[in-house]
Image (cartoon, rainbow, N blue to C red; front, side, top):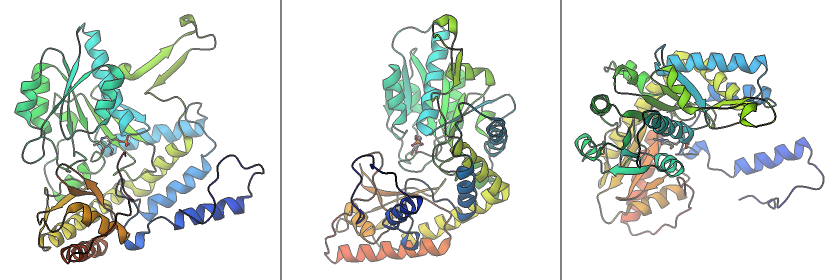
Length: 422
Ligand SMILES: Cc1ncc(COP(=O)(O)O)c(C=O)c1O
């Protein structure tokens, strides 16, 4: 909170630009700073180069709405789609839709599965079978669309339990989902095995790659690990991948891709004048109406500024950070990684009852470091950013100090900075 009083309504006289800028600087200055960690564990931090490219593009396209597009924005969108196809490895026959976030992308996949099942004449109450670790956006879509959710406990490695998921399928199952990786533990679900079941039973299979979609292909390439793009598995129907997480674009843009472009019909909407809207035919792909021209241009500028080399540099930096983090954690007595690093997410916990994880979160927050507390069981979860090895070494040192302080009996009140969806 800053010293200036909060605005409680529209100012009577509009402010001068100078005063607006001063107020924004003051607000931002009160946020946690990169010098002592990173400001946000929810999204990876944008590196300087794409951030400044995106800022310029957003300022230049701030007046445009992606709903009524002049040629400039049409070109931006066409080129953005082409670049995203490359980045994600979407085949020529596949369809790609830009959305405002992972929640919309997952919603459109669920809607696609539902509408396809209706097209096939499936009656009764539909259900979806997902792992317990799947994102709540699936439940949200299910609530909107009247679908039963069957959440199946994950296995001992926090991956979707394929056999248990298979057992939960019945004639009303319209969707299976996997996460690459899941947000809760950062582990990759066994996509190939679930795809085989989906293929055999002819069920829509959606991969939620909102977190890892833009990172995993590059991570695999630079480490020389075998990599199969999702649509190479016959059973995969759709994939969501957020540009605004490990694509490093400004917030407000994600993608839904489908294995064949004709499936886009399930998330396309059209009303004609004959349907009695007395205006003009109205058609949209995806859920939203207006779209920010600034966000589209910001995403375009990010991808152009980074190029393949930029994404590779980022992936190298994330791997370095993960390595520094994991090896540092291993040296702190009583602290353990919950799972090995797989794709940009690190989760650790305390196995020492004298060091409760919530106290550790409070101690880190009090020092200005990020701490996303996850529960059942308590652990700390982080999305890695390409901040370089020294930053992660400092962070590990801060964790070690916090552990010592708690072990010494200090009680630290929570600064209450980081919550996810609370
Ligand atoms: C795995 C996963 N899927 C979907 C989402 C939803 O994305 P958004 O918040 O962009 O709507 C998230 C967000 O963290 C996520 O981690």
